[in-house]
Amino acid sequence: MEFPVQFVGPLAAIDESKLSRIAAQWASTEELRLRGGDDVLQMLVDVRRLAVQSRSSSEPMFLRG
Image (cartoon, rainbow, N blue to C red; front, top):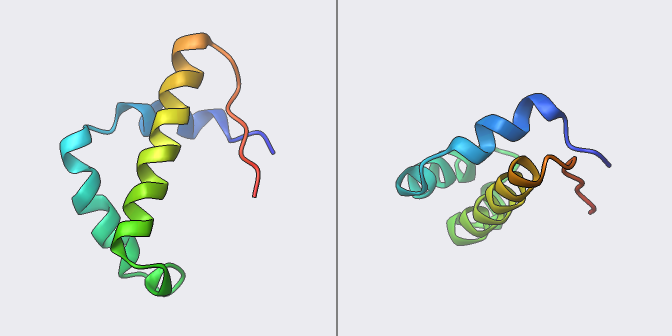
């Protein structure tokens, strides 16, 4: 599935120092509460890395689940 292009830039632009705080907020949502903060942080780190690669290569970002 191609990740919506309007989200790639903002994801890539997230400052790494803010990832922990964002992950904690996401982990408190009903949808992600059972995953735990560390899993959500790793997911966010990975998705941000893919967004950075996508933006720097001018290629679309794809996610598989």
